[in-house]
Image (cartoon, rainbow, N blue to C red; front, side, top):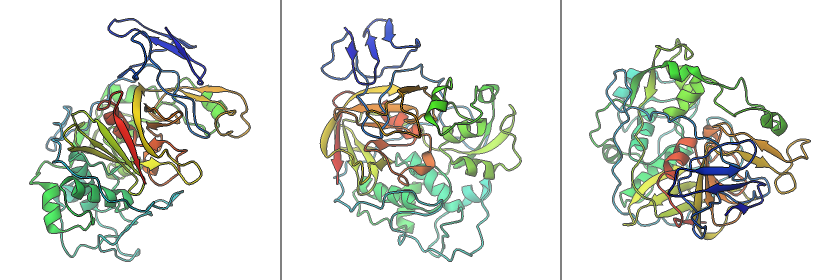
Length: 430
């Protein structure tokens, strides 16, 4: 049995046997994590037709080679994956919050409250940010932050929050809205008032006597530099469609995503490094390994621009910063369900259904890759045309619009994809 749907492709998955066949050109394969409910064992539909302006769940493609998660060992050459994050205690949903401002925000600016930390004048001297100053950083009541400068303490805070299963988004060293919300969600996970106020007591809870360095060393391998890498990613969709794959553009971009880092920060931390040479040792963040567990309920909080995942016991397992719709193309309301997952998805551009990009009036199949319109993952929802997906621009999470869907960093979306299954509920909170 096969199912034909609006993305103009059909696929047939034989569950329980090795054979997987797809009725799409050209021949590709796809890792299928879950079959949507209501679909017979002989077939699975991953993703609906796109909403106006929103990428569609596309014809599947082969998953990329597995990427080793960031290390969490002391500052030595590291390869092994860090340990899993233990789930925090049960927590009640937070009170509703007002929607934050949406739209493009200049680099270094934020859309949420900054009163939680003392902010200094923008002309204050920039702190010295090195692996040593980051690893030695600790909370001080009289510390003054400058939002336009990277801060060693903020780097450490971001890494420790990531280890606790509370994603700050990209690790970049800047105090901003996503860090503020991560602190609030950490407090929620401990059943505390989510005021976001940094204090010695809260810092002790976050650090939890964790003396493992948050910046460690990594030796670039031959596989890291082998590629293939795209010379650039064009903005025009017809040019995208002509490419074989929307790959990373460089080893530094690939490594930054592997270690949950902003690429510019990775380069700033390693000013003399040649990321294209195997054997080069670089300083990298050591975030947490993927959280283990099964998410049975998701809250998409439009007010805090965050996605929260709970297990069957009501424990908060994961929190991610998210871009959730916009005023022009709002996200759904109420409760929907997960129907399936597509890893490394292609994107079918249909101007008769989607927005029109430039002068492109023809249907285009845009190849998969981390720099594709939906990034590395599509989690299909029961509300037609909506999903949870990755992004080619992790630094823009909650700083730009989405077209109604829920957008996460690629690494957060990938982690979540392995924790959900058909029937997982997704509740949109206003």
